[in-house]
Amino acid sequence: MATDASPKYRAPDFHPPEIPELAAHHLHDGLPFWQYMVGGSIAGSVEHMAMFPVDTLKTRMQALAGAAAGSANVGVRQALGSIIRHEGPAGLYRGIGAMGLGAGPAHAVYFSVYELFRGLLSRGEENSHVANAVAGAFATVSSDFVLTPMDMVKQRLQLKSSPYKGVADCVRRVLVQEGVGAFYAGYKTTVIMNAPFFAVQTATYEATKRALGGLAPGSVSDESPVVHVTAGAAAGVLAAAVTTPLDVVKTQLQCQGVCGCDRFSSTSIMNVIKTIVKKDGYRGLMRGWVPRILFHAPATAICWSTYEASKAFFHRLNDKQDA
Image (cartoon, rainbow, N blue to C red):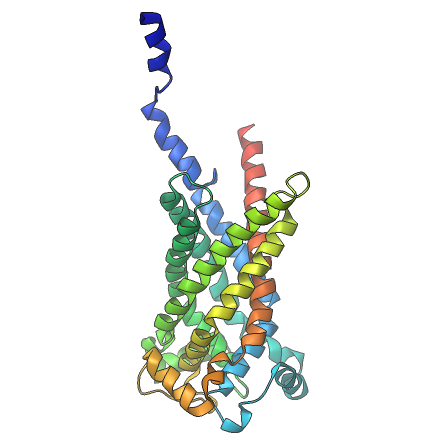
């Protein structure tokens, strides 16, 4: 009896000193926190710089909903043609400096917070859709606080006949004429939009990545660059489509009073929505949905594949240092 009992009690043995180490490994996927920040910063910068011209088209089309009523039916082709004819190709990149200053730090915050909360919430379950979605929501609230001021500057510079000479001039004039609060006029809307946007995006990305990896386990793994790009594009399309109305509201708030755009008596989301619907109908809330999807499909693919590549690089680097 004694010999039978001995292995029975040895089987469930646990070693408390090893638990923090295992938890930390799972929490950060084996990487130091700063490496997630660097990888996220690189991914965000590459994403926004590569897709900036499409973002300019989206901003122009959405801002038109709050400008002259006669411009309400301008489409992607007309908006692109107008910019090229009157401003040249450089017009598509006006405001890129502001995005360059904001995208890197904001995405460093996003991905590091995402990895942190995903590890805390998943409790060891790698395929937790809820943990991925909630971690994405926490991450976007944090990163939007960093990005929103430069996003506002970027959008004002992107407008046709923008009165600002550049990033520094826009920051200075907004501070003097409108105060610090103007930089965060669209923050509430941005968070309300981006929390579900990134929750849908991250959950869709992780689910699609696993699904694609499982289709042909012998030839395609969930760490394949092709899988990262495809999953990222799918996540970008779905997330962009469902949050376009709130993106229109955000653009209206950040560009209000500039270049003929409406100025709102209240930053209430419902107030802006009612104003847009009264002026342009419900289709006004979908203004710029085509360039928004055209932006986020490749942008999300670029961002996530770059981020995954950065993680792989740091894993190889750390392995060499440990060897």
